[in-house]
Length: 77
Image (cartoon, rainbow, N blue to C red; front, side):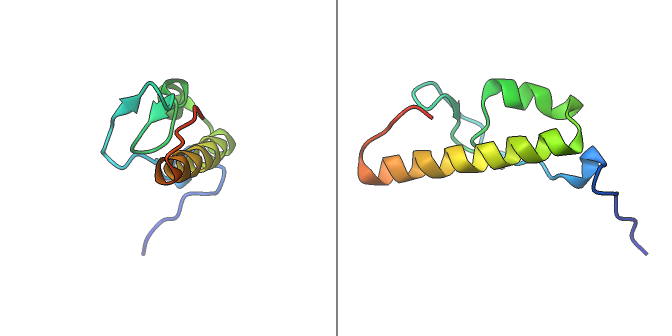
């Protein structure tokens, strides 16, 4: 039997870290997970809603960055 943490438990929100840490100053975030340095620093103390917001922002930022890289126009997130 596994115990599932409640949705309001910060542990219920998986870290976006992919263990490919590389802060890209031109991008303004980690090229691996898409989080800013402030978001990475806040992660450990963030509650579940904040973690979900960080994940969503990081995913959107990383998608924009990847699209810019493919199109050849890199813009700051």
